[in-house]
Length: 110
Ligand SMILES: [Zn+2]
Image (cartoon, rainbow, N blue to C red; front, side, top):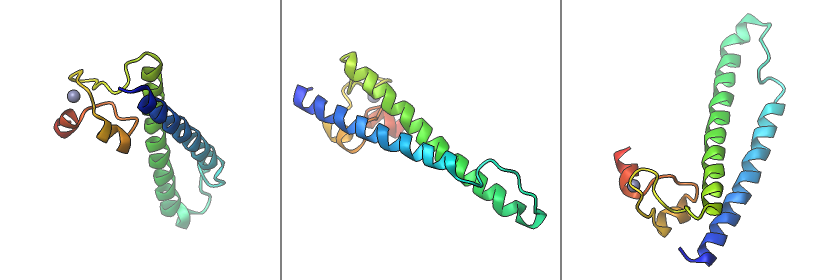
């Protein structure tokens, strides 16, 4: 991979990381998140919302870990290599999804 491309992906990943960390902080600040409902009529809504919040946070966390692992690979010179088949992930896929761990073929199979 060209150094120029690598730098671009690194920048994108770092920006994304900052965004996600900010989002996670915002979600943790949500007043109703994690608090127990005292009104039984509200319970369903609350737990539904709680579930939604959790799944959003889960999604952010898993993206964050993908991003961290991609950044680590950049510093180890292993960026852009599929974790399953060890072939190149390909610039086109990385441009859409710079934190991708798998190549197109392995993604299809997964
Ligand atoms: Zn692969």
